[in-house]
Image 1 (tube, rainbow, N blue to C red):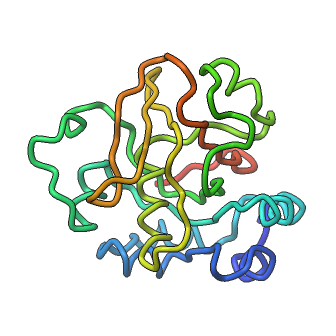
Image 2: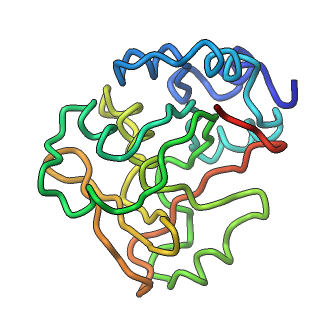
Length: 195
């Protein structure tokens, strides 16, 4: 195993900042395949020192579950018919572990896209819109962790994921001014193959 066990990751991050595969299955109403579950149960692909740093910086840790944005929104009771983003080619949420900042990267508000990206550590990336929405819903069954109000990416596009009356709204930002700040996730160790 490269990384950390799930139990050790929970001990480092704190149970309120971690969702396990069974939490995702319960929230989404869909089970992982035996192969997917086995892969996730092998451990979390982040070093203990990374998890310790991320605990101090208000990150959350969760496994994704292969699904497209409309599936995520439907599973969580949101109306998707007629939404502009239903046909947009957002990548699916992947079956892998995510270590994602709760809000936007400090210092990234009111900056353009290139300036925001320059703030990222080499081991960080901007998560996809579906992953941000997925994480938001996992941690907001008890409305406590505001993982939104930030920008995310999709195939060269930039989108704001913001609170709305339905829980989450998605807005096309283009590549203009940096409103709001940028979302950040840590890149998993190694080259995972998630089936």
